[in-house]
Amino acid sequence: MTLAIILVIVAALALIFILGITVSRSLQVSEGASLAGKIQPIDVAAFRNLINPAEDDYLRRRLPASEFRVVRRQRLRAMAAYVQTAGRNAAVLVLMGQSALPAANPQTSEAARQLVDNALLLRRNAAFALVRIYIALAWPNSGLAATPILHGYERLNGSAMLLGRLQNPAVPVRIAATL
Image 1 (spheres, one colour):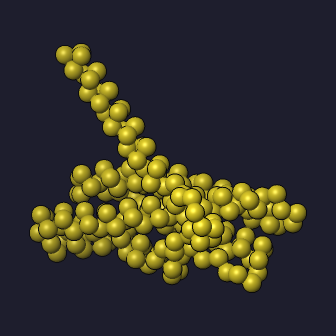
Image 2: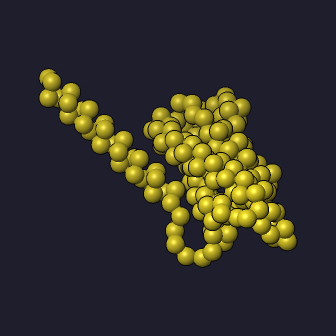
């Protein structure tokens, strides 16, 4: 009996470890073009619609249970794609902020520090949100909160625009398709 419990615990820990590696690799930045070219804008309005609990409640009331689970899983997959993109964008912005930290202008240096802090926080929250989304894919009736990702991404957008204006006022920085 004790051996069975130990094996179940080891299997659960291995699953968590594998899921953690998968999530962290999906948030990494690939090598290639310039950092600014790696940023993929996110349609914030569509993302806001996906994470809106009122939308889920509306679908739950209007659809049969089996159809709701199918639609909910589709929405969760789309939500995971948005969260992965937000996490990748945050990784790019961490690199951009780190390169601007040694700037001579104290305002630029402070904006870069703020950008790095916000981007690191968003990356951490994105990793946790992805784990919760993957769990919700198995149990589509469970609740989840990706709202911190949206708020963090909007805050990150403001930090990136501030740093971009301080470094190069002629070139706007946008990480959101619509705000």
